[in-house]
Length: 120
Image (cartoon, rainbow, N blue to C red; front, side):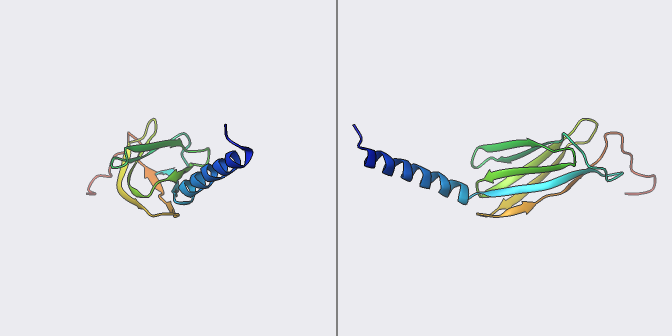
């Protein structure tokens, strides 16, 4: 049976270890807007995947089109943005360093978007 002192020391070690994991993580933030009228897009599904770590986190934009993906381990990520009536957008090679917050803002094209004639 553990004494109270041993138990308290064990809890302290566990707490210190979990704090280290959080302290060495990064955050991705940003906003998503309509590419045509620049209006914020709510309910866009934003996924951040890191195949090397076999990790993926998914969040949804708020009513102002903002998103936040916290506690991401350092590494290389691919972001995917999906919304009804909009073309899916993927951005690769997002590099996260330890204890950093990076901003990735995106403009999504509507599914029915047509390039103006003569533009390429």
